[in-house]
Length: 460
Image (tube, rainbow, N blue to C red; front, side, top):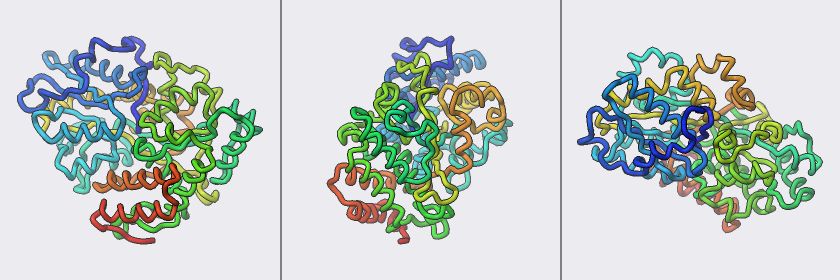
């Protein structure tokens, strides 16, 4: 899931150059030997230089923290990299007390892998003494739990996914401004109509392949896969046998959808689709410039269009429509979404874990959490914020994406999941380029799945 925008902090400088110049990707001096009065906070910085939402938010929290705890300092350590590179760099940092920060931003899809590797510290002793923990919804809490039942991260929001569409392009294609597809065929039909009647634009974007990383797996593939079947069972992981599912028709059907989009040239050029910066291209160029008809994407997109973002687009809420992603054949519940999110975790080798949790508590007051959800175009995981009318009215689209929580799914983010995700991306890339048939790509996934899970596989 990408990092989000800045403009909810009008008192902060937009660029924050001075505060952040000394903290580019350098974890040297963290952990062992660091000052007991300094908390080192590592986070994912957007690869889009114009989007500084996390930078602005943390700079504000840093000021609050240093005022609340006189004599204590915060050192911000941004890691500017695409998702897959960020995960790799974080894991490298966590291996040694010389490089481990005191606090790290962890995607929920990776947290169990890092827990199993012994990289993170359980937070239960801190959480037991923190009254605000009762405000967090259970699904968000569970996303940060290890298989040992302990909690290793504090979630800072969640997200959902759906279909964004350009009303102007739809009008030219003869499609309704109130579009709500009932099944996958309706989605493809709309994309084909755009290709035929509105030349010069990309009909639909589906993230795909290894360069897009988890965006390909979650925003595209799982949004398709979890819309197959009858919706009563997880199509990726069999929880009864605790094994991963191979050989499913749903997997092939999801691959076929991706294959169809790129075979019929309904999506971006393959070279663009496989650009590691494709998420920035979609949010910063294709959508705001009227070059994309349909985007299967997340609730956070408006972060790229807020004032001060560099891609300001105040008209987005009137120029874009929102539709739920339908299930394959329109079968119950009729729509599908995926949810994930990020957490703040304390590395096992952190030099100042107590100070790190004090920083979490400062970030996660009701007021600061609400600021973050709104600036980040995120969905609240604190009950007191979710029930606040100011949150619900803060931005167009919040209610639409919050309502999708009722029909959302969560990834089986067990330790093997990152490898499973990579195997999915490889299968997608094969059918996107046309180098691999759907059947061969699905077979290749089944083989890779065995290796990724130590043969903990069941065939369906």
